Length: 485
Image (cartoon, rainbow, N blue to C red; front, side, top):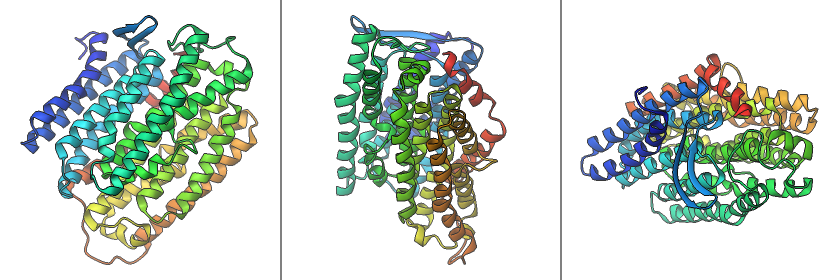
């Protein structure tokens, strides 16, 4: 796609998944064509994003002005290394999630499949817009579109439990963004005179230390998609949704939009140097640390598999938040790497959980005796994802955690060091018993796997979890470039 200009490619990154929504709706009566349209759009988007990735790695910073809403309020796109990393992760995982969804939705005879694929495509379009936002106003618009487009996915089953989960989901995410995030953006615009993202930030010398700490708190808690406690309950509540939706929430888009926003604001609104000198982010070290440990303890006690994975996500996200709070170049690299590592690892875990449900109708850890012997491909992939969440080599989860630990040690922040070490032990404590049950206890029943499309998808992401450790070049280059814009 090198024959297309960078602004055209930027426009296509939003237009392809948005256009797929219309195609999916029109082809709803023909499931094979509908799903072919989904896969084709995902493949085309991947091609566009990979082309942009090559340009960004070569030093380009493509821009595109979309609209002027009011003086000082413009919808505009500009790619930087952090946004490129997020977009590349989302575009890549949309392909495997689409393949997995075909097997899952058909294998479980799920209703309203056309709406599912259409809303998923809108969510991906919003993710691209958020990742490539040039300013806080554009980011806020796409952040809200992502919340609204994923609500029908959370309530997909339309059962009383699903509708309750949807209310919690929407009330928490929209409520926090309107009550906390939007005022933070307005405040920033008033004191900085701009909402544009800039290398080094836009707030240096604009506010006192206490005011900076308060503004930073508004951004952190206003970004409820990051699931920092106490604004985390929407995430386990949303597990009532089908597994491909859980994968979207945990790996592809929603929670990554949350931690991306916090990291983006830290680097390009406040600036790492400003956060260091003012101490405005120091309080977040303790909040993120509490979230990591508390979520891990809750996960340890959860028998429902998806609930255990949900609280694992809450803890893992706060590693990235902790890195932002440490406010150092090494920590930022660790945060960038962990965004990619957590995405590919956690989607593997949810794919495996959905495969177990589809093939065996098992949803609880206590029901998983011998299931690794009956479903070796599925549980082998689960084992790789689990080891990555613990942070063991040769899996991707080791990389980001190592850099964050190095940053905490370098800052002599022994609280952060302790949190990382204790949580690693807790991660092992709630993942390893699943593996011992699955592989070391007798199998009760014949060997069988989920539909082939699901097994292929989870095998690919499990391989990617190891591949990202062995060949971390591109994510590491992008993470290393974040501080330079």
